[in-house]
Length: 211
Length: 189
Image 1 (tube, rainbow over the protein chains, first blue to last red):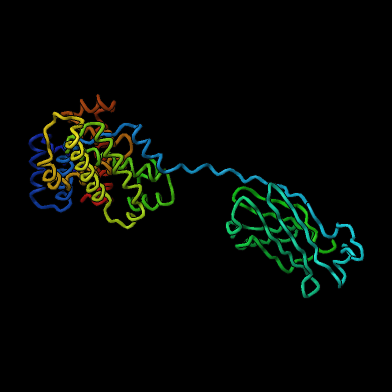
Image 2: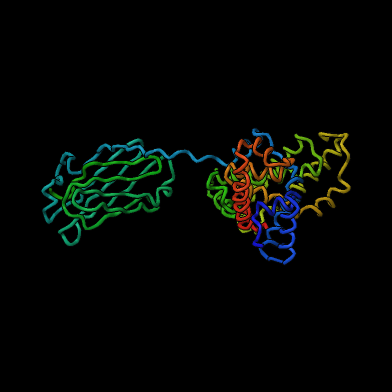
């Protein structure tokens, strides 16, 4: 005969089934069919050990206490965006006596003086410096993020994006002092975004060079 | 059934180390009945058994990192549970505060009992896992077939499971095939 189905073999092992059918299965097993022997082996093991299972479930409150040791991760909420305010612009500063203030026109002039900008939001300072590059055709943006509520080294690795409509965003990381540098910038109006663990600092308009 | 139920112990431990709460819950539920079985062997009362359950899981929680490369978590759980049961019984004996002070003292033969039954405990654990991986209907059918006091006829099974008699045989056959596959996957045989 062909191998009995698992259902029929189970009934056979549990002592059910009519005489002739049992005899046929017995005869097949006696032939040493390896598949049926394997099935017989695991079915008998299950039949033997299942009724001995004296396990139980512990009270739900005890299990809940154990599960509480591993905190449930909070649902990640979208980062808030903080709009930074301009506090200081060296191009807008009143001229000091005997000292010529830098003007936008200076940006195009050979005597370009670096422009210093300071933005603030929620106790976080973003200090920016725009310098004309050595090739005189492009600019460099140097920046530093300073915050008093966390060690400065914790800012390392946070991402700074510089956006401009016509080009893909430029991304750099803050170093251990919260500083970054982006070179080879053409004169444009850019948007700067600093992504911190607790929010994004946005500076919507930074004019680099004379636009 | 959630996807975590299919994970191996090593996969769950790895995810626990990434503070995956669902992985931790799966691990705790997977082993609670094995721990319960051992507390039964020691004839602990409900409160003492719950203390052991917490102690074993605390040890598991604290040692997740070293268990990352452990080959057989079930053996580790059995060893720690037996140790916790012994500690509890020793402490209770000294203070006379056993949950069930009138229960026969099994300490003299508990160790021997467990030595003889570790393989049985592990097999029962694997069988429970394989059954837990079955679809609901199959799980019930297999439990009726092997775990409960078995009905003697298809008519009785039909009444218990509200299934037509004619479909019990084929359904049970398919469920047994699934059980076999699950048992193979977790190295039952």
